[in-house]
Length: 335
Image (cartoon, rainbow, N blue to C red; front, top):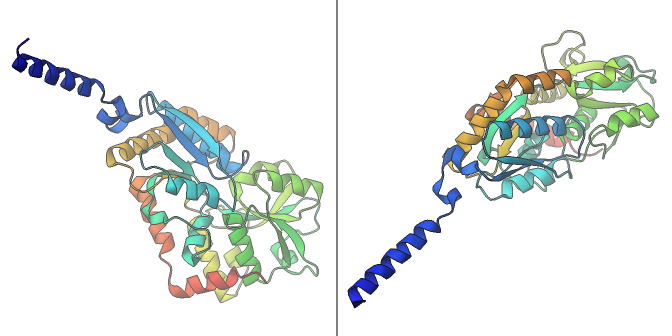
């Protein structure tokens, strides 16, 4: 074979091999990228409880609406959702790692808590599934029937929270300090542990998302004595029961958090076409009648928002005047 023909043959062979060696994922964009791919959906708490339930619903139905993809739920509890959230934030921004965590991290970022390795304003926001007011919950066997009776206790009563840094911990601690409540905070109650502890009698109460603990209350194991945020009129709003100026400012801050619940986000820098595909799958999941029916059966409300709208809510929640941040820091000082 002449030398020119040999070179031409070699060049054609190299070009053919190069084209054949291009991986499907590198050539695909948007929703096509996820075909044949596994998406890890991190839930920053232990199995059981509201975050796990919402996370698994979202993962199941996003998979259905992102053809060819496989979603795998991975629970990464620890440090009040910090472990899971730091993991999501540090993940490779290829769209294959996303997850959920609680809004207590907004407080943590506001005060610059040690252990925060993320900036919520830089994350790739996919959506939020719900809004949830907070409630003060008291075990049924307790003699405490009202918020005034709680404040009047002569000895501290045990309140359960998840890990330090979680929304439940942050909110319970700052309300306890700002209102000088006779409450002794016990940490480490993840998932439904707080409900079991109230039934055993080792815990008197907790501050919880209302819809997380609603069935427990309906089953007769606990009662609500006050609510923070939400539009329901069946229990008194905490803002109407207190007069302390600093406490009212903190209650208002908590009320803003009740509108941002059951988040789904990924690390910064997910390519726009892949992020748009994830957002579209999330929206279709929220609009899926089967997901809605499952949520209703589980007693879990849906109040979704999407993409940049959620980012705007996060930025607004983090845009607090210095005086409020100072009060937040002071309220979170362990006393």
